[in-house]
Image 1 (cartoon, rainbow, N blue to C red):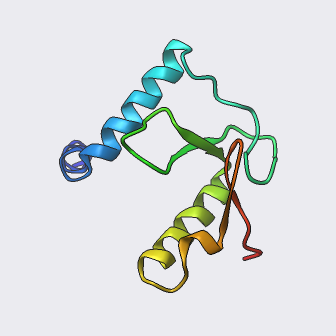
Image 2 (cartoon, rainbow, N blue to C red):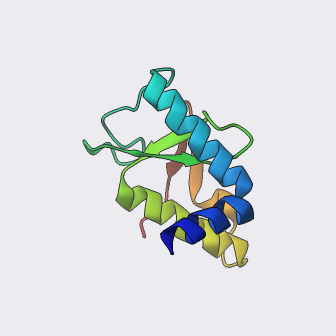
Length: 102
C-alpha cells in the first residue's frame, strides 16, 4: 500500500518529488549543509527545507516543524483568497520571514 502511495505521489507531484530528491542528494553529498536552527524563530532544531519554487531545488528556507506548518497554513489561506501572501512574509537575506502573530 505504501509503495503505491509513493508511486502516486511521484506521479501527481513530480516537481515536488524532484526538488525534494535533489535537495536530499545535495545534503547527502555535502553540497548543502543543513543549519542547526530555524530561519524564522531561531530555535535549535533539525530544520526542514521549505521550497518556495520547486524549479530551484536547492533554494530553500530552513524551518522547524512548527514554523513549516505555519507557512503551509498561510499558503493555503492565500490560495483560497483569505489573505494576500505578501501580507504575512518579509523577504530577508536568509529567505522569507514569517510576520504573522498567529
